[in-house]
Length: 318
Image (tube, rainbow, N blue to C red; front, side, top):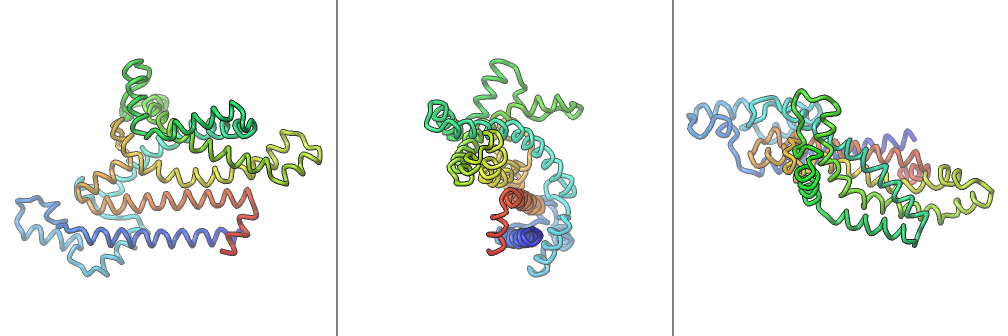
């Protein structure tokens, strides 16, 4: 297991290094004058030149690349061009807001989706199974911004049960924040329920048809013991892999939902940084998303390796 973990961590580090390199190339291909952007269009050229010198924009590309690698390790990207504050002070609050929405969405989605997938698999080819599959296909085919607007109009505007905006007041307590985040979280449930439920259903059907399950049944084990000790440990491995990859997207890809519910999360912050050519904030945001993807997929790999020792053997031979 230790060797497997070391290999996975090393591969993740290589992936992060490649991501930093790609970000550096893209940023340097885009034409821009950071000093002019900070000082404004009417600032004297001497002031602009002094700012570019202080920011290191005139340094050789190799020096800038080395500085970016160092910044990626220390996560110190200087000041944001737009906000005039350290990048950390702008980026981490947005990350915390996105984390709240992601956690709430997962808490609501995973139990319902996994239970529905197992329920459908154990009743394969019945009306209950077809109902779960049809509902899952229908919900996952609707984009999150459509489900978000629909829920916002029906539950927030027409019924008035929940706030139509997701950002709670600064003095709001824990339960008040949950109330504000519930509508966008329900939109996430509508989108991801079908995907996770169908993956769980397929994994459970495969495990139920496996030789080890038939052997366990013939040994006289109870149905509950067969499901908990033999079926679920193998059936949920594809689900764990899917969840690991989707968490990274949830942190950075929910731009439409953030706009609909006026929620200043990480995704909208990165998009605005790109449109404003705020390169320190953009670079830090992209690298942060890459780190999140790396950590979530690494965690998923380790969980799968714990659930199935054969995965460790395959991973060590790669």
